[in-house]
Amino acid sequence: MKKTSKLVREMRGTMHQQQLAEEINVSRESISKYENKRTRIPADISKGLMAKFNNPQFAITLCQEYTGTGPIWLDGPNIDLHRSSVKEKTLEELEEAIHKLRNTSLAKPLQNLTAYELHAVKEALNELVEAQTAMAHLMAVVCMESGISYKDLWSQHYRSLQQAGYLEGADE
Image 1 (tube, helix red, strand yellow):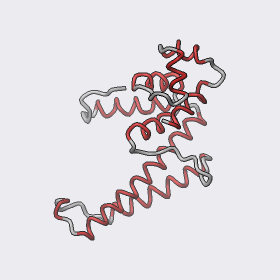
Image 2 (tube, rainbow, N blue to C red):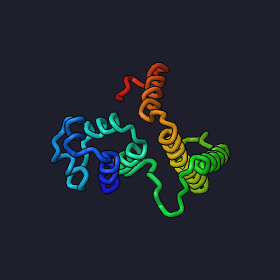
Image 3 (tube, rainbow, N blue to C red):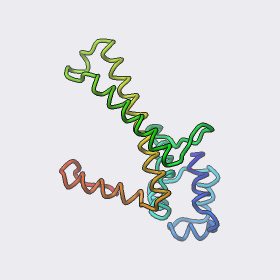
Image 4 (cartoon, rainbow, N blue to C red):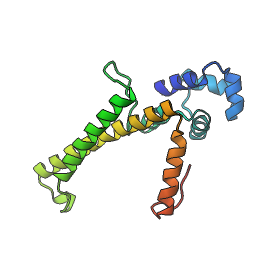
């Protein structure tokens, strides 16, 4: 909740709390509570904030803070979020993940894996997690710099999954 609170304040910028409250149909007091970490942002309000600001960092942070899983926004002293650096790191992580995945057998039932085989599966999954974090950052950085809508990319993806019969219905 700490980082989403800060992001709400940053996204609001020079806009008054009352202005934002009116635009997303909540009270000014609610905006204050979100920004001061007194209450979590409800799902419907999160969607409203995403619709208004289309901020990939907010989306990534919100997902991680609410579920405790998924990519986390990297903001440590050693992170370089220049698009070229993020692209190179993403390629590196994808190559490592593909290599581990190719060398991991998933042919037999997973409950029958030996300890060694299970360790190899865990290593492959760890590489996939690292690749997922890198991909999330690449998408976010490029969208933020280029003005490409992060939300629209995901909406288009959900529609294509639904059209292919992979989803019963998309909740955008």
